[in-house]
Every structure is written in structure tokens, then in C-alpha cells.
Length: 54
Image (spheres, rainbow, N blue to C red):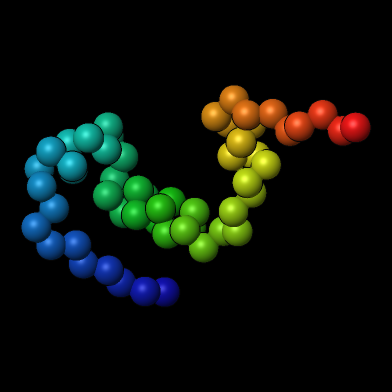
């Protein structure tokens, strides 16, 4: 298990976490960062559709 210190985090950033701990937010960010990109899923999330097959 690793330890991480975050220094000089602006109060606005900490307040924007909406009752989530900074630790939980960082854990989610780091977990997402090491996952492979699913471009098809991302495309659907922003409203793009796969081209129709011919």
C-alpha cells in the first residue's frame, strides 16, 4: 500500500469534492488512469454511433 501527500490543494478544489474525501477521489482518478481506453464506450457516452455496416 502506498502513501501520497497532496500539498497546496486549493480550498475550492477540496470543497468541490461534494462530501467525498480527497483520498477517495484520488483513488478513483488513479484507478481510471491505468484502465485501457474503451473508445467505443466513450463514443456512445458522447452520442456518437458506430457507422452502419455495408
